[in-house]
Image 1 (tube, rainbow over the protein chains, first blue to last red):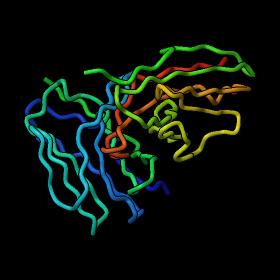
Image 2 (cartoon, each protein chain N blue to C red):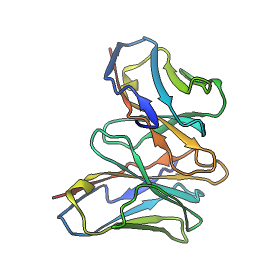
Image 3 (cartoon, rainbow over the protein chains, first blue to last red):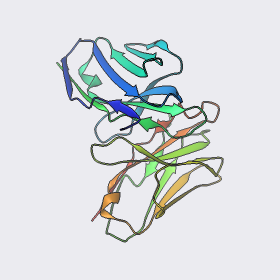
Length: 111
Length: 114
């Protein structure tokens, strides 16, 4: 079983919809939680990182962490066709170097 | 803003050949990380360096080695290449003050082993 589980999708929604992307994890030592966006044939782009349980908002993006349930989410409001990409959750143990990624969810926003 | 630079962007090698991938971190970033991403897979951590010293090691084959130089650029050396080494290789960098949670990725080197 992978340390970080993420539904690979694909997920297809109409433009303007609210998108919810989720990951679960098994290692309670994870301290930081990141969301990356990866366009085809490009490197992952850091969107947000969070540390504690709760919500963190950045523009149309909201990251949510529930450490008690070992569950994290990324919400995208007013989704745009340019949001179409693969979204990867990633986690790291404080003091460690390696990011542990989920499988990535392929998202398509239809105009 | 300046980003992580990787070269070459594409590389084709034959089995048992060697390859060298280069990574130039974002200016003032002192930590470099290497990841391997197979087709349809998530990135897998290989190795990282801070101030020219290896700081963490993941699932890097013994055939691979890496180092970080005084100008903070890094090179990943791959020998006795196998078909299974075909993948995207990403370098990421961060500043120690921000730590491992803010790793910025380069565009990757696509390696094809024939």
